Image (tube, rainbow, N blue to C red; front, side, top):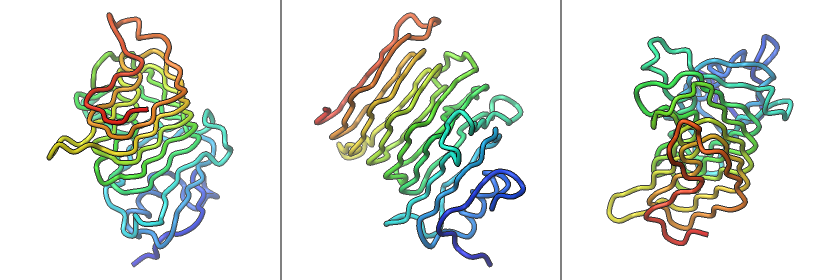
Length: 238
């Protein structure tokens, strides 16, 4: 048996509460949480993929936060591309619980698999996903549609604010629900900088989305076309 997590924990190195992000995620998914949890990640480069499909105690007022301890996104680099063969390269974080936040981190991709590959991927259970002041850098040069920075599938109340994106086919791919003529609610996409893309912002089946103050430059040079902002089947977009 283990005790549910609550409060602030350090990650990275022998003196931290958890030596690696994998150790922190394993403790969270195994032991659960009894209150909000913040993981302060020390400077360094971390390799691996992490699955937050289920966390006992998640939801309600409880928040899960991953944040740079130094406050400098460039100093904390997450790379998931350690899978062999390359076809297995998938998501850095797979999110299936509510109220997860990423703040001040760098996500890098060097390989793209033969299935949809997002640095952050969330499903319908991950309401309240927040990504702020992060950097998403693709180094693969891939023009595959599988190459995505953030992908949300039916996730309500997503907040993507103040991030930098470079090199992905889709910097943000927001796929709303399509059952019973429903729409995904409350997307906020504000003050992001997007460079070198086929689609900077792509969102479908959304209601009440706010898209404001974003900078879109430089369609991928290998592309014959591109979109800074693309929406379809949206209601109340502002």
